[in-house]
Image (spheres, rainbow, N blue to C red):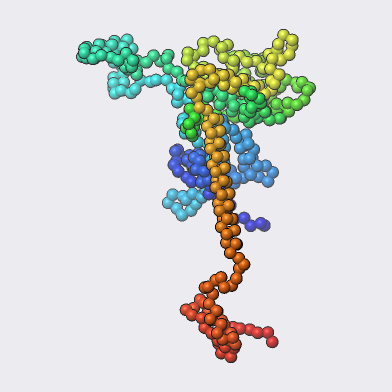
Length: 483
């Protein structure tokens, strides 16, 4: 049997430094190569269960026939998804014991700026002692407003000579009208484009927006892609990272894959001229009972593109568009009262024109088309609106970083070439002194060759050299001569 080192399972862990335990089994780790901060999640119990199977995750991810980890990371690998970066095992010492146990971690992107849900939390009344001790005597909202009005009058009467600055009026933060709360339009665009990019990858296998001409962009869906449906697009699962350079907003990423469903439907190769039979990815609704495909097809024929969606209506890519549309409605000010005003809510991939042709020829990869359309309008908004003109995107900063790296590399190459020229110049000057002669070196002492009939034995590692004649060589029992 081929020998394998017991330390092979732990080699991957040597690429990371552990920092802080944020929650039980969740650590921030730092890559030793470029000091990138990531999250490491201990999933040993998730896969081993109560039985404590020694096989654990390594046996599940790597078998003789399949490399599941490679396939999963290939799907969860996009700038706008929380990416599965790596996995490793460590030997952890048991408390109060000299024994060690093997723990396995998954490594994920670290989104260190919270979620969109944090920005949509409504205001709440702060806790007061009166609320706990005497709830029955709580005052009504009218009494509270009257008391606040009296407080303002008394405060203004106590400062009769004080003049207010009309340019910077002072108001109580609690007096702000809740209906005037809003998120910046630039942030709404940032979330829309980021999540659409993530969905274009999950639905169509489209890696990124690419330039296809002056001011024009497109996407390249992966042939025969099997759509993956996220099924949990909520503000709590839209994460942000802190800006890494000068961008207005850090990277926005879609996360939480506990409800992801990989369908068996494929989008086609996009090259055949023969019109395919209309098909789409149909999966059960999150939290609902499992249904067979035949039943899902019947329910889809019954409901079509009904909105609001019904409890037993199959979940499709359109369900994901609508979930994103509802999030955007919650972010906008004023909120949209009519769903027809938002295209994500009403789009019908099977809509036909008067001549009988489909309005959307690439119906199987329509998420990518939506992303291209939204990105075009986003670029237009950034060029025309003052707020948009001030936005610095993540992509622009990446180009700046790449340019700086290229300049630094060019400077290093130029410095290396200059150093080589200097060395070659010195060598050429030294060679001009030739030809090489023994008497060029005065540090060679020839006086030691005073006895030509003597045998010299080099004893330089002692304090001095010792000279022996042939007949005075000391005996050495360890010398062996051939007969």
